[in-house]
Image (tube, rainbow, N blue to C red; front, side, top):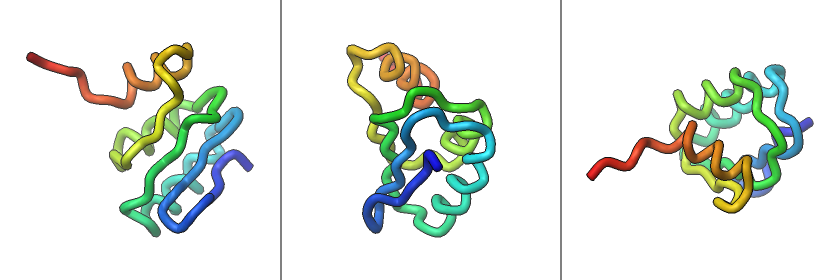
Length: 83
């Protein structure tokens, strides 16, 4: 299982998160709307998981910017910066 609840308000996604995890993530986000989603230990996310994150717009803890995954997740999950 790649989706786990670490603390009362923390949902941790780790390793490779396949499409089967999208439903579990959605259920946990619905049960805890103020939860922070920790993606710091993700290796990959299926598009279904990304869609849940985009729709739910939870607070995210992303991998460091000096990693490929961190850079990619920021470009996909965070709104563009406009001047």
